[in-house]
Length: 457
Ligand SMILES: [Cu+2]
Image (cartoon, rainbow, N blue to C red):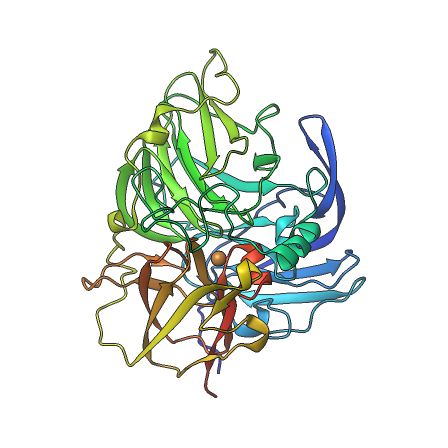
């Protein structure tokens, strides 16, 4: 049974062609895969209740699917191969059609097959709120770690990880050995010492490198809504705008009580909406790969004539007040009301075989034991990280609340579970189907870190 979703009667149509593309990264032309030849894809915009009809055409040499990250949509449109649909063969197509759920916010889409998420295949999906007038300009900033066509190919990286493992720590101490406390989260390393294993030659904002940056053009005093999306495969980003504070208004699409910070971290798959009141001049907009020695991603905010900040500028805000999950409080309209759980489940997150396998409850995805739920249940899910890397855990088809006893934890669909840490989430089982739950590190997922939340029928 599909749940009722109120409709506007409007239809938003779009054709998405996946295929080979060339991308100019500051003069270096790289070959990759993209939607309609563009990185990122042009945003899809719709209002709650609109019907989306998206005709996907697969021009890739391998099967694909498209997943609509964060939307509590009908299960058969969720785009998970062999769970919700058969993969779309090369040269074939699939027509996705669904009613946009009731929550306006910042979402995105990407394939759900192999290492395709580490190519140029990603795009924003913006559910607009016609009643929201809290800003003057709407700016989408998609952050991404780039290697395809420049460094090693995503497929080669995965082959290497299968052979030699990952988690040994390209950037940090990593692994399970060493002195107690080494590599654990701290004030300077909030995600721990080993945040990812892939070194990327470039990091992009809206498909651009710092030498040919994406520029937000505006005027002093304007209120900008920045929609931040981490589309990276193996990189968390620390985001800041030089000379500006960020007022966080939404986490993973859902509103929170506004909170002012200097900087914030986005794990892979996470989104934040922030508003900034533009100053006068030219300011760096930066996303620093957390815990990596890679070059940073940078764009510009330009509101007046002025000197362009030198490339590689790291504004002081990066070391200022950082957003923590504890700062996020759901607005009354979206808070998941307190209720005793009907069911408690847990996911133990582990590394095995020297990082060649990443497991949930001791099993890889291909040998998964689905987590059974029943429609109508309040479900508590404990995410227990028994490894020395953080995992941005993502649940399809639902928005959960971070559980902390006060009934007003933020609503999210992706949450960073810290090394050796534990995060509890709560959700209402109100969207029947078979729903993937997985780490949003592309390589961890391919090495097994996924399972399925399975409604009994
Ligand atoms: Cu992971």
